Image (cartoon, rainbow, N blue to C red):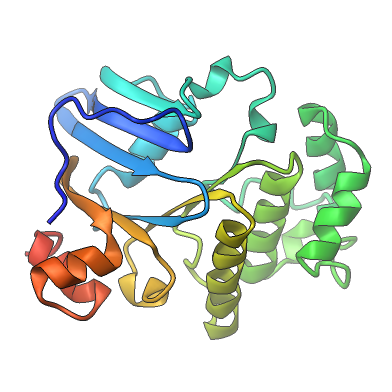
Length: 247
């Protein structure tokens, strides 16, 4: 089994989180979380609700400051990139859009904020097949439509790294299948893909690597097929259970 070693650092490619800690008053949200995600691979960040996944991602993206440890993207902190949305595109909450604004207007505004070319809006709309509803007010969007809008926003800068937090929440089977295919396409294009989820069955056969966390600690990390072999199991659910992700 591949386990994290104290002080293990990243190579400067993709995403590296090393011994991250974060406390909110008396609650220890992160107790030394480590993870790596590499180009051309889909990495699953797995754990139950409350295990520290979202806090880790928020520290990675500069939305919260960790108490100790490092969280870097291509070797440096998110905020030190000259144009960070061209390096990493993230979807942490697909509901952060003005319901009175059309999806198209939302994308235009975010493209302008990010300094991205206006034609990227039309390209993202086309790639995510949003043409039939993108000019409607976002307040009437279904969960799947909002998810596509969030992903389109993240892709405006044509980033090399994509981070998705619980991307299948609330989606129907067709939407889940679409997400599965999308993340594989991202990896096939050479992007680094980091997907946080607690619903393992929806990502069986999609993930190349996994990082399993519980109660703010990294339990185990490695290539999925290698972990299956080492643990003598044949499913992602079984890897998760044997690694201690589930009591």
